[in-house]
Length: 218
Image (cartoon, rainbow, N blue to C red; front, side, top):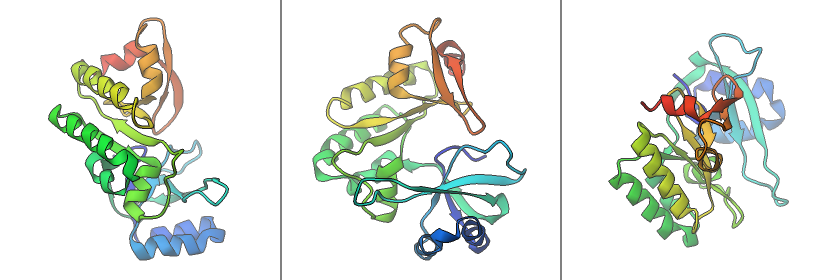
């Protein structure tokens, strides 16, 4: 039901649970609750109780560029609503001006190809909160959800093309929910029978073969 990078809106009990686990950040939680901003699904922990979900609240970088993500666990019953990561075109207005035109072109190309791209990380958080998450050295983190091998090839071609002009990073998410870094996939997929690649899911991080991932698109 829930996947990594999904957006989660908590009810009052959820925010109380967050505060009890990280009381030093109570003012942050209060601000998020007041503005009805979402937190983000992260990978489950090994000793996690049934019916709970691991979440993270990433803060904007401080003056030294350091980033903090506040991690906590809530009961699923404390979730008011949830949604997939931000759709690609929703992030355009909040991007720095030098990136906006090229990124809009990428979004348009994805739409014409009926390719599913979403945004997470700093670009998404800046769009959702209007807080200053992005800098000139930031990446734009994308999630690409191919439905078949043709879409995988087309989406990878777009990523390679626009990465020449934009600081694109992110993951390819296969139907099972396993996700791989698209740059690593671009390198490894040239030898799918021999190469193993780091794949992340809600439960674990492990090495998978490109062949096993491609089989999900058949």
